[in-house]
Image (cartoon, rainbow, N blue to C red):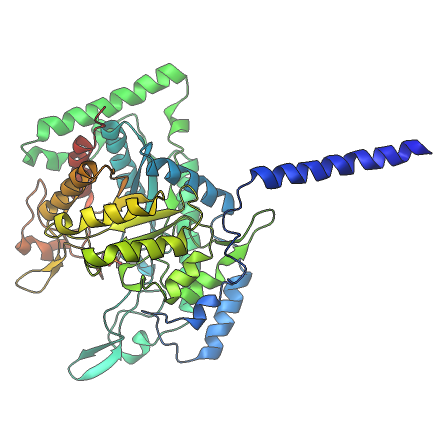
Length: 483
Ligand code: PEP
Ligand code: CO
């Protein structure tokens, strides 16, 4: 009769041992400070840049329905990205993040999505060539629908209506019906994100980009540049590397082109982000499954406010935009407190700072930010957004940015990081794969007067296909590893 007892005891002992082993080796990230957090904890704090929904009942109903729907991304994808970002933070990879300032429901269209993937992929190959590092591609897509606004209302000819907060909240047309915040637009935003992601996943699985022929990239504009020879050379080298890789590995580039694209958006509209935040079997804590990599915008990074409260509880890798509104003298305290709130365990890949100072301010502010981060003793991935600090209005009132200012901020950032014993780990652009005219400059030398030809952005001006590819080529040269 002793035998059966032994048989029962042995597996359970092993099981206990396995549990012990697991708890010894599995890091406890996201557990220690989480007892007091729930997806809705943010509602007790001040939430800036949120629309006022006239019908609260409809709002609860919409959130309730969203919370039942399947997630847009999975926790394992999120964890893979976190691991890749951890490598970028120590200089082993480079982050390329880009896409629209604001996606619109109307532009959830095949060519727009394909062109955006194409430009991001081409830029990433140029950056791989230059940096000799693997590049992480993250789109500002499949959910970049909510925008912070400087005023809750907009007044035209004496009429005040709610500001346009992005397609996930209301519509841009200036009439009462369009501007009324409608909670069911969150459902439309979720669906548009799902449609976009579905198409992106299918394109990637199908090996959408033919990497064999970079010489077919649309490079006509390059002829206008004094650097034409250099650009053609870069592209020739990429073609060579692709063929070399195939010969060497015996793996067809159709397989190699099954590269990862991750998604990101500003996690601004908290009711939506809350509804998409879930617990996942066999994982600790909560994941925001609306996107892989949400960020906190510069205007909503108040330490005691709702966004920091919400973000501290999710397990995703997260980013915070940091701009000149935080004076250098305030940075040590701000950085140490935000790092304590969002990055208490120094979990690899968890936290990214996206600095966006502008070409004229980066030299004054960035060294102080870098020192403040170094003083925390924790690892933070440092990325530059050279767009949002460089916005200006033309004489006729069009919002634009100049290619030269964007490049200048990036070049300065690269050298300042190096001088301060840090490194620039990535770049964040507003761009499109289409031939718009929203930013001035670049090889074609777009002027203020050219902007009206193809200005489509509803919010901020984006680099077009040519400008984005040229920008990648210029900065790739500067990012060549020093050793
Ligand atoms: C944005 O990324 O579109 C944006 C609003 O940026 P920031 O928060 O840096 O101003
Ligand atoms: Co923007």
